[in-house]
Length: 507
Image (tube, rainbow, N blue to C red; front, side):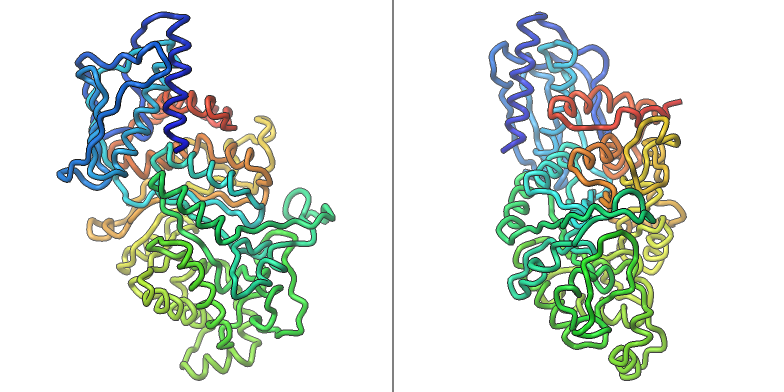
């Protein structure tokens, strides 16, 4: 496993420091992100041998501990990690990585004597990557998984279909990748620009590649949740199979070359649409074993439905009075189908429009209001409000002065990410419906994986701390100090392209 390589490499480099600088203890308290539940100091600590070996790890599973709860003990001359599961032991190793990084950074060869007890506040701690607006290789996706696992983030939300490209191989519908994975060209500059690069752009993941990513993530105790967009953001699918759109098989749908919201949506009144979606999800469920399947649901204009004879006939048949109910019909139909496969749906907060079953989980992105409304209705919620956790936003209030790369807009400094209160406006009974928190990376203006890292780091650390340590967070300046001491050395060692100006908002 790659993480064992990181641990081994950390010790090799540490040994090099030792040979040059001699024995030296790590000074001051250790720094860990996210902040552990408790840290007690004392005892001998653990010497890292001068050779290229690591202190032996004594790992065990303790069923008295919760599934993700671990105890890391270095007080008696050895490193012991006990966890409630293999997952918990793995999180303990990520903490050890950070401690070793601090020791190494100070030129030392002693892991201090500590007893760390830790467990997460939320079971769902997610990071999303849009691979549709811009495509990232399997190796880059795996590196993203390594990045989030370092931060004890345990869900990878993989955005696989969009207006600008369909990225998942579906064997029953080969045109989805033959046609839908390639756009003719791409917008140059910001939204509203009239300039295009004139170069076809494409890429998709084979089913074997997606299975490989799922297996890679599982080794790092990360669950992959796939997203197949419906009923909107469907241009690439309709370019492949135009008969599924309200304008019919003869309409020249295209894979979109710019960004935004487009009127092209799946025809809710066409029975073939449901058949298509069910067959797509058959193959998706065969690849992805996750409990949740993300069905999108956001930004679906209804003008096409208003003019479509098939959609209007379905509304009359069902007694619907609003086109929003057509979206609810599609969502509920697919939810029931997936339930028959033992799966649950999760969707953006627009799935609340027109009504949604109480078994659906809502991902609140338009601020926190959708999540608050869903929790009050009794639905489970993952909070991912754009104003706190859309990592495609600028990181400072002066992007030009700080020479930030082009972004979609907005201003989301590290401090604001860290300030999010997931329980705002909820009473105790409603708080139980907040299952987790997620950060999203949309890639209209992120064409390379190097830039993905730049936009994600260090802000992923804030997501990690809010999701893991909520209720146990420290003052912001202490949080930043812990990032600098525990994570930046690892970012540097791995070559992650983090944004140093993200710290400029420190007061």
